Amino acid sequence: MGASFVIADFNDDVSIGNDLLIIFTDLDGTLLEPENYRFDAAESLLVSLKTQQVPVIPVTSKTRLEVEHLRQILSSTDPFVVENGSAVMVEPHDNRFLIPATHSVAPDSELASYQLLQLGCSYAQARQGLQAVATQLGTTLQGFADLGEAEVERLTGLLPNDVKRARAREFSEPFVTPRHIPPDHVKEVVAGQGFRVVLGDRFSHLIGPHAGKGHAVRALTQHFQSPASEPVTTIGLGNSPNDREMLEAVDVPIIVPGRNGPHPGLLGKDWAIAPFPGAKGWAEAITSVLEVGAVMAQRPSS
Ligand SMILES: [Mg+2]
Image (cartoon, rainbow, N blue to C red; front, side, top):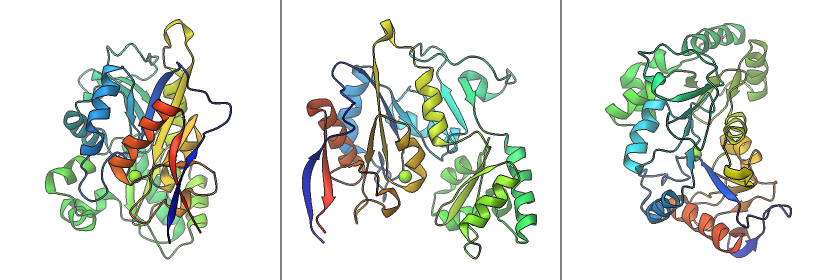
């Protein structure tokens, strides 16, 4: 199957002009290459966005410890969203965003070093929820806590230190997707127990009822302190169906394709598609938004 390249305008009513920009981005397979987690092709653009004070906000299923580790590598001090939209974290002195202090965090908690907006539940609640869902489904659900480090390492292919960070859950529990149960039934039972589930091919995530990548993006956008009330345009980039809610919540949604094209689960919305997979596509799509107000999109020719 060949592919043609066209310029895809985003929504007609979006004109970025001199708007302030906020970029929300998934990490794995979007900003980071799917195979090796590298982002070389986006590095110079990230530096330039930082100089221009454009926030580049990771929105990911990863934990705080995982994102903190990546932020060091990315030299980022921008806000970030963890555990599938369970919590938004902003540096205390980042006055581009002002998060009302509605959550009491123990002063000795590592969370106390951020402006925190918690949308999801506690980890203990997620664990209890998973147990209740398993009981009602009449099956065993294996969460990260049940699997243990060695098993998570085997199933994910992560290195031991990365496994430790991935297992340091604060708001949600990943579990092995029960493939023998229809997804709609899992969702129904989860909702009945007062939770949400983000279903994936291998792992799914049990999150609190008010968590979600879309909720987090909307909340963070609301708390953006636009100087002199200048208009704001939000850009979102993602590569898989768990990014759909985030892409629906932004002004300029961009799909970053995989090696075999865009994920079928994201098609049907007429969203722009970056011209390459991973960091290269990420950087080119944003550059064309900045330069020409449109995305060089790849559209399957058949
Ligand atoms: Mg991804």
